Image (cartoon, rainbow, N blue to C red; front, top):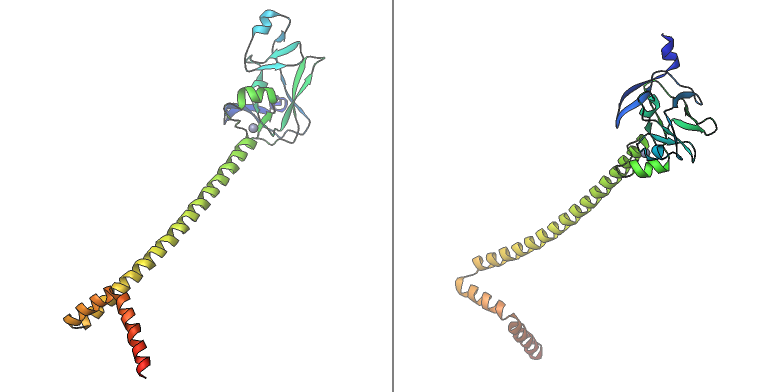
Amino acid sequence: MPTSLASKPYRIGRSKTGLGLFATQPIKKGVKIVEYFGPLLDSKNEKHDAIENKYLFQISKRWTVDGSVRKNIARYINHACKPNAESDVNPAKKKIIIRSIKKIEPGEEINYDYGTEYFKEYLKPIGCKCDACEAKRKKKRAKLRAEKLKAKQKAERKEAKQAEKAKRKKDKAKARKADVKKALKKAPKASAKKAKSSKAKSSKAKASKAKASKAKSKKS
Ligand SMILES: [Zn+2]
């Protein structure tokens, strides 16, 4: 194995958000992976202070590293909210070291937390695409889906219940109609008319029936 690989246990590769830095060898916890470097910008220098890009890494109030230079391989390292590396800033030496904070396996993407300021300015507006945030979003989506499904099933159950109730009502009405029809068919036409009219005047009939029964009781 070439020694250059041993000194550089990473490669640039495709990541979810474009390019990223990936481990090519196991990297132990607490090991320097790469330095984040570039021209030092002095905030007291107006020209320096006017420089604006995504790769500025502030070391102190006064000093900032402009990491946008191509040679700065560390600029390929993407942000993660639950990273496997960290940026170790040494203000006295004006140096930034990217160091592993857990064991990193070959093929794993190397990442570190860019900090709240960067997150708020660049990541929050478009949504952080790190694994932790993707997992969180996935969980949220699954929960929403489950809730939606539950609501749908509840609505369906309610609908079915209502349909069942309506059907029972309809069947009952049908049965009643069928009974009347049967009765009409069995009875002669004249009496059928009677039955119809008696039904219409059922209250009167009832009243007269009551009278009749009273008369009966008197008789007996
Ligand atoms: Zn994230």
